[in-house]
Amino acid sequence: MLARSREPSFSDTASRRRAIISLTPLIDVVFILLVFFMLASSFLDWRSIPVVTARPPSTLPAESEPKPLLLSVAGSDLRLNGELLALDELRVRLQRHIAADPGVSVEVQPLGDTSLQSVIAVLDRLRQAGIERFSMVRDRTWAAPAAPVGD
Image 1 (spheres, one colour):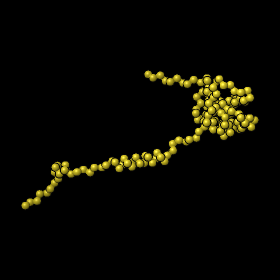
Image 2 (cartoon, helix red, strand yellow):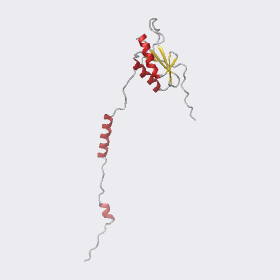
Image 3 (cartoon, one colour):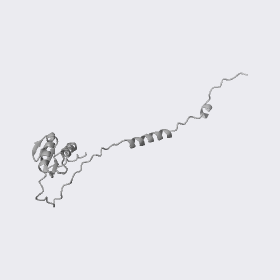
């Protein structure tokens, strides 16, 4: 008898079972890593600056209460009661006012399109100088830019 060489036929390849790769272990590992990094990470810096809101207009300050200092912030320009100051001079100037009157308060007024970072830098300087009583005052002359009109 002649031996015939056996070559794979179409029916043989169809009958073979393909290996199934399960994605469940991969998904489990990715999920565990996600949970780990969510629990191990801190995305926020929880420093806070307490800001006292302004008094209602019906409440008038007492006569014995000293007039608060007005600190205007316009970009990098600072004005303390109208006098132009550098940010480095602010702490020294405020400490002089504290020495004269320990109960002094400061009203911080951002002017125009002053960035939030500029205002926060000024508030940090107030805290460094020992000012505990300060409030934010709105610039009544500033109007928000108009929203662009869609085509």
